[in-house]
Image 1: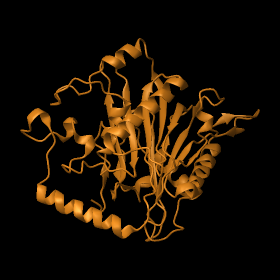
Image 2: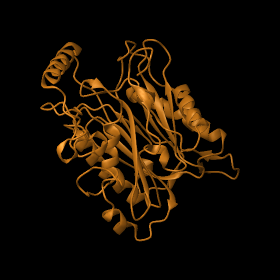
Image 3: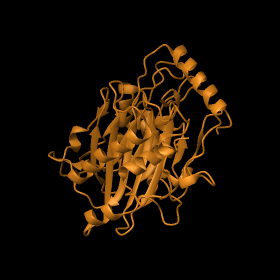
Image 4: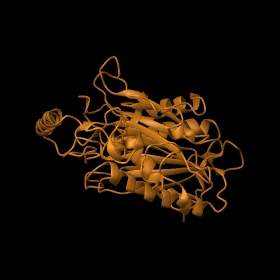
Length: 354
């Protein structure tokens, strides 16, 4: 917990985050000011970029440069992805990232000199306007530059800071405090690393209203209660759960405004993927949203999933290996040897945004 304001904060467990994909780095920046609850998160690709794709769903998306990621179009790789608060205004943060990359000669070469580049920086925004009290407190180019600088300064493989940071500073999911979460796994057989970073800010709820358990906790060994049958999660006391649901309903009634949200995701992998394959991964990861937040992809959501594939690990017979990969880790107490996919990492990341 943050010592100043009591908001959730922390870091993902080592060996369980997006930066487990070698070469990917994550940086956060917050809009300054006591009445500001917004910020930007940047995922920085290794030198030379990463194959990228996107899948956008929901009725209220806010994005930039996503058309460039269509497999039919020119751009082969990107150097960074921006996730930002501030709704459409916050997409200005990508300009600061663009300028930072240009200064280092990173981008699509368009002229005779190495400095003649145009960085392609896909970005997606979420709605958090006014949540800190100041409507005009939103990310801009300076916020984006600060976030990408933080990513570049991070040690390779360093844990990802989670909670109410970066794009998750003012995030709300289902009326609860949202934020940034991350998770990763290594697929058996292929050795491919798959990871996800999520900014949980959905209209839907991550909590089962009947039990008070996180939807994403069902079947996840990380949440298995000691002695529980089949490795099930711990259930809150019914009286505690009922009181919490009442407070949540009262808070929603006081807010007076319809929910305006969006959940943002970056799925990373070291697999060597084509752009079409990367786009398929992004689409599959949306299944993780559906498993962790209900309902999803609503008219007021703009749920967006990016894929970044560094290509460090060739997929020799990889399709067969991925299908055979078990969902649980060696030695876990999970009872079912189900497949672990991008959707599983997406769901796991949502349950750890705190």
